[in-house]
Image 1: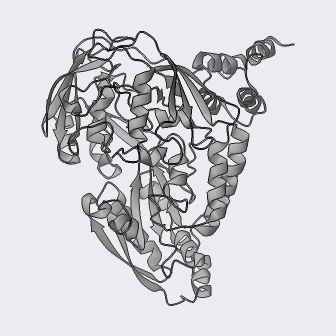
Image 2 (image 1 turned 45 degrees about the horizontal axis):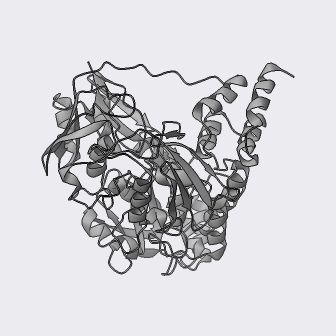
Image 3 (image 1 turned 120 degrees about the horizontal axis):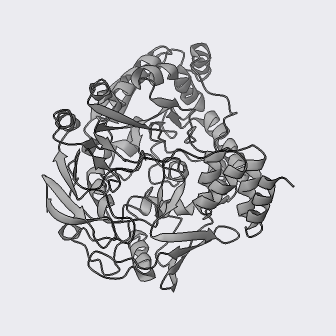
Length: 551
């Protein structure tokens, strides 16, 4: 037996059937190193073990990142937090960029979408993925001196899953994890008893779900006073609407942060942030929109980190309102779009092409053999005629003033004109567009035609459920399809990649046929930093500054 097979055989002996299925996928050539590491990490296998198996097959290893120098201050320019900062309820980038420095998750995503243990040392599912057991790290303390234990994890997720609370994480946990479903086994072990089996559950308690930072069981609110957590930095000062500063936590359980201090300056708009970066007033920004990227891309003093993302703009058509009750009309509009112009022009090549489903190219389960929908004006006109709309129709598209979305709306307006659809644009401020974010009180959810921004996720679960299942809280398309609902249930509970891939293929084909929502492109995230900044991990979730140095 060749040496590398002996190495793999030894590794396999202590693995479950589901864990071994990931190795089978790798050996069969159906997945590469990146997908293998990602899927194995979700199942709770250690990254060193997974890397060793991949290396035994000659698949190499990623280059090690250069370590920065300790000391100094890192200055970041971010958006003004949207209100009082509370990890249970916040939803905006300005808030979570701050909290990420002081509080921690059970695990975090890496640039390759693998999961790295943080406050959890390991995790594993039961046979059907309905119960996940997490082993917690010992010797960890909160900034207030309290020991981190299972009680804190239970209290954190009971808060987030409480249907009577105001948790922003209910969009993730509804139908997945209920209050009371997180149970203490001992001081350093918890079990998550899920409402339904789920093969990707660890992402729901990772940085992918930014509300899921672990807070003390004693937490009662008023987070801004302490920024309590277990993280590498502690609060120094916080001034609403102005800024915040943090200092290195000398008692941190892990590798101590490189910077002595972090300074965050708040800006009301992206343009002042960019000017501050160009002037050297800050060292790093949170992600900037595509439409202003040219300003920093051509600056010799600035480096722009391009982060492949699954973020997208969902163009919904209300399936319960004419003319979109006829799927031929929805298909015709999708066929009118020149996606190459959107990716190459609007996004300047910094995006992946969408195929009218949430399955971005970055997801391992995406069936890339499903034919890519392309512009076909002849076929689109035929569909319009068959639907009795040879003379077209008039419709208002309502959307928000954010990033590249107004530009996308104008291009869509022009594309639709070619098949007789006369689209007028109603571009609103974000507050007006989202309203109260419930049906009947939201232009987002009530408009017959609209475009909405969706942030990056490392797995497609939220994209598949909330905006598209029949009772989804974000179902702006008012799409109701029991076959689709059943496929999503099947996808979410699948533990092995082969099963996920088969169901994903069926979902992709169904959505291409029904076309309740158009997914034209998945734009990269662009994070600008000064040339003298190093060590910032290129992850789509947000800024993690503990390994950053400024020379």
